[in-house]
Length: 182
Image (cartoon, rainbow, N blue to C red; front, side, top):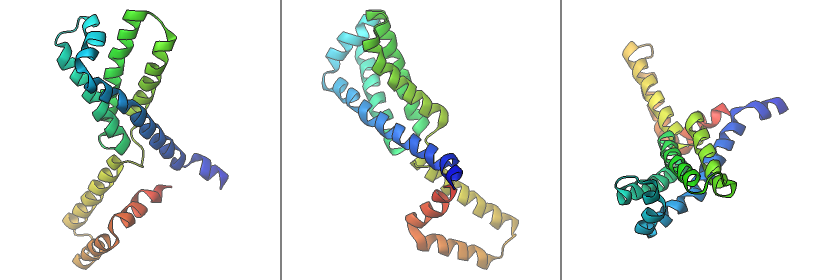
């Protein structure tokens, strides 16, 4: 029993949920701060790097942090959101190194954001995400189509499957498909 609790995907999926939600929640305010005074952000962070179109790139940074954070929090297109954050944080790390050298006090938070977003991008969102729900719904639809196309089951069995799926609603679907792996 103990080995099942320690090795099943519940602990991994719960850890990914916590990492996604906390990373998104603490990072999202940085994007809103950029939007509050975009010109100031462009002057302080983009222009010193001599990048073209500093205002446009400032908006890109702000929206990638806001959008990427929301995608992490809700678990939808999670890897895309994590990659948006990785890109923005990579430029921020470069800015910190160019302007201040290896100052651990400036780099530590950036490196934590980078590590969190990179981990999420590499491992995926886990079972407790909208991405997983969508994948399981699509997989279920594909299985139903293959069953009907190969005619392995009678039409009465197919209608029974559809009726059971319609009766239970979202909670039953989640219970049967996501929580069944636990």
